[in-house]
Length: 83
Image (tube, rainbow, N blue to C red; front, side):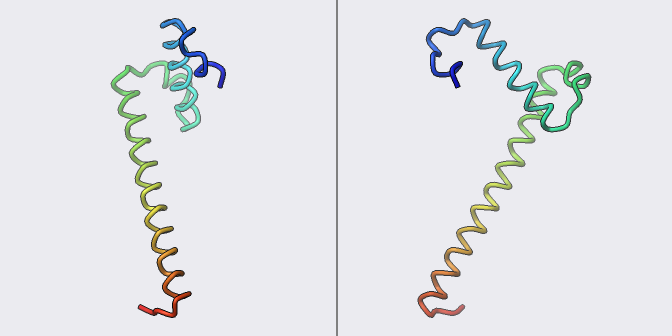
């Protein structure tokens, strides 16, 4: 991404504009309408993004636990150990 590679050349205005659009696009991808996004204040946006990030982290943690359990189970089976 060219924008982040040359960060020394970015003005503060460009950084704010970039962040605004990244957040807007992320919320649109979440299914929030353009109109609703435009009416939200920063606290509401932070709450929604924080909640979404927490849910994704929970999903990632569960997937990691499941993969670790599966790997451990297959290792025990290959070694002839049954639990």
